[in-house]
Image (cartoon, rainbow, N blue to C red; front, side, top):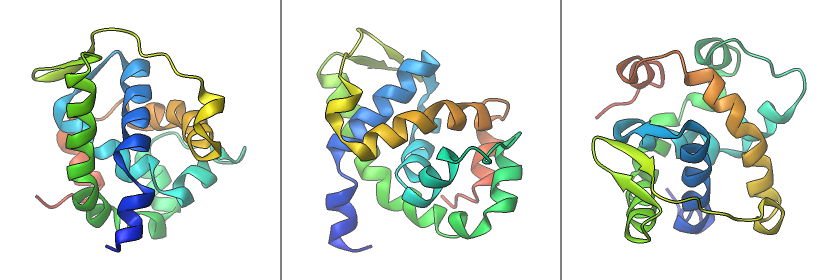
Length: 150
């Protein structure tokens, strides 16, 4: 991946995205955290889910209809893994989250969505759809569906 990919998808945006997802879920399995950024930091996915007609019952239906968006998901997963770990460590060292076998919130982290830019505002609007798409799947099913190769 190009250096611009890392500049564009850095720990600043990743930390806010992860914190927003964890806040909505209240608790997140540690192994599901690396699936968040490859999904929510992809502009094609976010822009598509912002459309009114983007109503999918589950993640499999979405992937089936937009296969092109997911052909490089494993590469994005691997590229964003260090960013995910760094972002989680920033949140833990700041005492915002607690990491054990799952991630929980220690204290509310308040930020004004409108001050974090248009990209984050779009992602923030898509997070509830992301959560709804994946909520009924086990972790192993999600790794299989996204075709993650470890």
